[in-house]
Image (cartoon, rainbow, N blue to C red; front, top):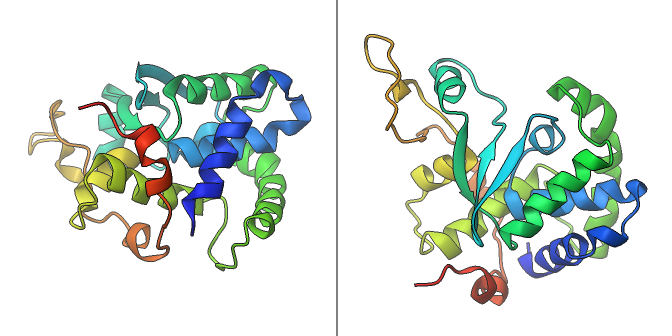
Length: 218
């Protein structure tokens, strides 16, 4: 998968939010998925928040698919820092646009019912436009592509990246609490069971073309 057209698309959409109509919401949703790697259920949830950290990072609140002791962790510490693949201010503005245009709901089930069909159809159009024939390229694939690009740009392309991917995707594990059931507030947000599909389903190319725009200052 070439990241170049995806990144160009995200930039073009998010830089022109003021010119978009409410009916353009699918464009904004896809642009944010490319830029932030968040799930559809997270981007379209009313309680999700993105807060500015620096041009390459935001603080994200709104993690979904949490269970067990990880749920306890996120209840106590609901926000964590993630890299973004566009200017952080654009990502924040894009998510605010979804809220202002009424494209957020209050549950993951409502997100699936209201938005998944339209977004699935829209991704098929983009897939054709971008010349992608990979059978697994769907909305959720944008999360895996985001993770690989972030690993290249912000983690030095480290092949031993399971812990890094777990941190930026917000996967949790049982060791977030001690043997007495108390929260370990400084525990890493890592999950050794992070699906290998984040590394194996796609080979992402052309990330170098945008690295100079995204790489943090030394």
